[in-house]
Image 1 (tube, rainbow, N blue to C red):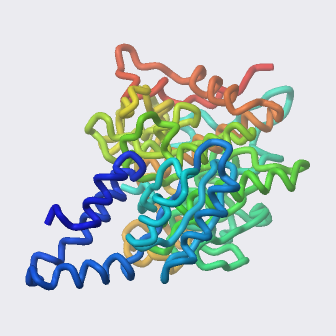
Image 2 (image 1 turned 135 degrees about the horizontal axis):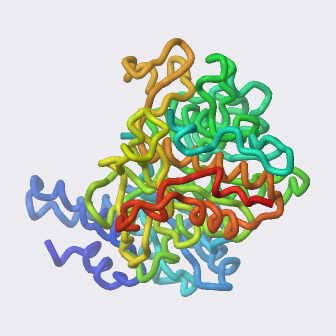
Length: 442
């Protein structure tokens, strides 16, 4: 088997193919175990011409334009090959390629630095606001509620729930290309409520941490909560472009309750998803990302939470009380350090049995009926829930300090945390989030 041309190609180009792509190419040979040996060359030629996969092509620094043109020309030479999307901010594009087309790309285009497999990305599912001290915060005679701030939910969409009335400012759909807000999964709606529910349907009981913040829905995951690296990159790129076009009312915060297992690259900045979230951070957008639900094992922080810039959020179990003495880390919350020896998560936030908004007849609503709370609400657990609560607290800070940079917001959130003595920062981060302490006093 190891004389086959695809495997020879993988060996030759190992340094320019990431591990998931190398594995996907080699796995093309799996059905060959049931095919007579003398037929292998014939079936291999069919595989190389017709079996396609989606990849991310990264070009060398400063060579995106010429690399993109050459890649487009190369893909046009093969059936079933095409360029899909261009991401000049991070010098990448996505493409559908066959094995034969990929060989042509790499042998004719010196501008290509590396090619990545378009990996799957998923949601992070497995008395919170009061416990985080996010209610009744006042600064300069103003009651902070997130008013005037915009939080983008990069997720499964947003159902126009009563508790969000008039505050879904925009909506974009990279899955089904719909123009009106909806959520066929339910995860994004729950996260939206964790940020900005005003509790209208519960007489104020189930409020988010920033109940007056405005929202933008960026749908990058389908009805089962799944997406791809490409759709996530599109969503974040859209947010950056949105701010370039709406300088008067920009997105302040991106909340991402999603991720994928972190791959091992030379450094964390070589991860395409990390590149994109850090572009948003550098453009002035605070980015809050779920740590992941792969605990209690160490070294399980998901991508893009491995980024050293963004705010990576772990989950606590507050045992449904506002007291700190009975709080424990959620068993599912992912632990650091990252594979690049970065201490993560940055902060821990309540994420167990969080009651928030229900999206009627969505995938989660139909498959987890026992999680319904009355007719309007839904209970879920995960770092998915902790992350938007953190994003809402970031909105309180931005309401008070509109010109605060992402680095300042992160510093204040970490600096205001309640500490546990002798607790491992790769489990608890800086500590338990405390909004009252995190919003600057002046």
